[in-house]
Length: 98
Image (cartoon, rainbow, N blue to C red; front, side, top):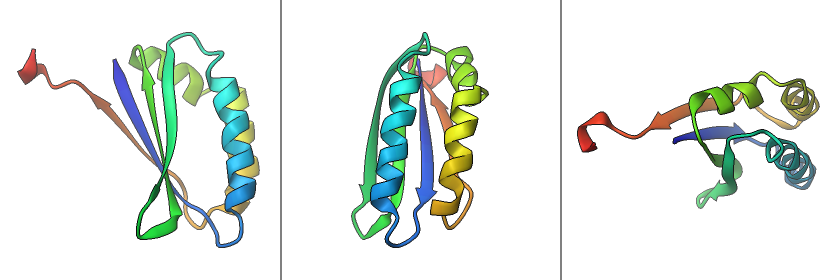
């Protein structure tokens, strides 16, 4: 299993529109085989900084979603709501713990 953290900075006054897009994207992501779960969190001291943490069965499932036409369309619509490009971090279990 892998976890993916997507960090986005949302423009002031745009968070509700951003949430609508995230709901749509999550619904589409759940159709991808290998999607396990996802959640949206906000930084406590900065309500405009959003983090999506998703779990995937493997990197291939994540890559399928990452490269999908659906994700690219949502991301294009979302870009005007963001102050910077998204930052993506892909995490996997440490081999040291196995």
